[in-house]
Image 1 (cartoon, one colour):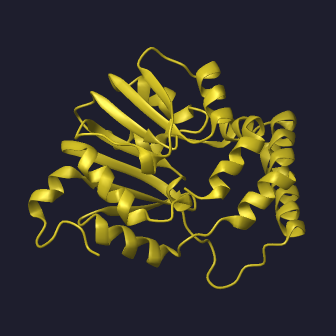
Image 2 (cartoon, helix red, strand yellow):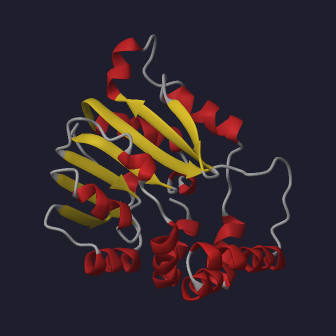
Length: 236
């Protein structure tokens, strides 16, 4: 996992306040498998999705590499059937044990996405589902990554946030989006174009379905697809 992912340690509290206001779990909840004994949340952050999944699954294993994020999750979003682990997903090991594996905007931090997708597939029980959501580039070609540009965009969005939330919550979002640590993190992130994203994921997940979700890309894949695959299980 990249060093940029570990930067979340420095702004965990502000990040949690922002995503609590902004994040929706509709994409994941709309595609849950019928069997719901165990689910893996890869890159759980402060536990928002893990807590929601705990209401639908018998057990949740939630991984993250940021101890400050996990501290927030354990304090604010604990449940008897959630197991939070400080663990890099690359180092995690499991037999086929999960009815679903989910990940929200974490995979772009990894240096070898096909390798982790191969592991995800191995960790699913027959008929299990991958439900993934990640960032893609919003504009083709070179886009300036100037700090002033990020702060200008945050200021312009403030008025919309006041309308969508309220003044206090909009101010929380403005402060987070304008803070130097978050801007530095955004400047370090690298995203695939939508076409590159589909090509990369389709090579590892034959039969995967792709859908745009508010500027992100959603990926759905079911382990029953294995029986329909031809040739080697993973394209190199």
